[in-house]
Length: 231
Image (tube, rainbow, N blue to C red; front, side, top):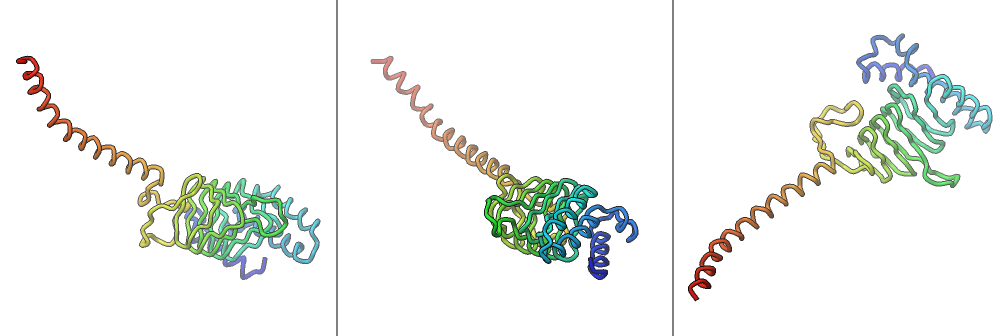
């Protein structure tokens, strides 16, 4: 990894992780950064056609960090891999600049073809813990993928998606640029919960209408009963 990239990465970790108290701590103790350093060497070998040494070096990095990054994947600048354990980034995945990925994230493929089959993550994207982004899809600039979401369709720029399968949720644009784990929980409503609330409101309205219709019928029935008794 070029020295300027390393400095940028260390600065990015310190900006996005309040637990990082010094640059030396980031250099020595952050497996996400270590995984990227191993990947830079493996990727350089991969681009030179040295596929087996690249895969071997990638395997060493995975064994040491718990983060699996295929040497063919492309990583942007100032990428922050927070915690990172269990993360998988596939061969044709592309990750832009200023992206944050949390532990358990998978950037996976859905076909057996040898072409582009992994996602492209644009700039300033946050992918929450355990999220799966699958297939040759684009996650647009500034998008947020909530924890444990399963994304199988393209995500427009600036959109927050959650759930299985992932769907867009309301998000106020005046939030700070960085949102931990990609989920501003105080300002968004889960799509399923939103649908349930809508159904509940419709049911309440129907109950009110049925009650209003039942009142005139209840008033008519005693009159008919008296008339039948008099006959």
